[in-house]
Image 1 (cartoon, rainbow, N blue to C red):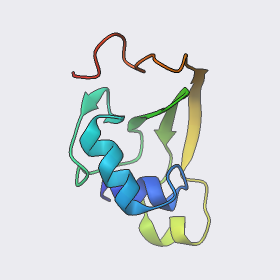
Image 2: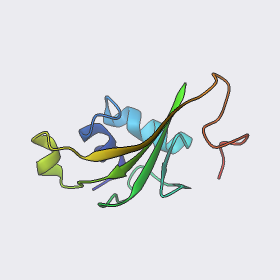
Image 3: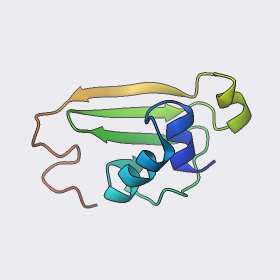
Image 4: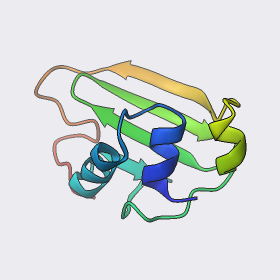
Length: 96
């Protein structure tokens, strides 16, 4: 399943277009690496989402679109860390 679609289906992001923008901007990482919105997500992957004031790290439990649309639990929170307003989730540089 595509990363942008996964983020929307598990409700980590409200809209798929917003998910695409966040991934492209580097605010979302898959397995610790910057990827494209079409990157393939599979069970067991680690997804890091950098929101303006927090970093959320989750483990993918389910990557089946039909099951996620039925409301099945798609992830487990590994870390939920608050950030200072001007702090990058990945240190001093958002590149990586």
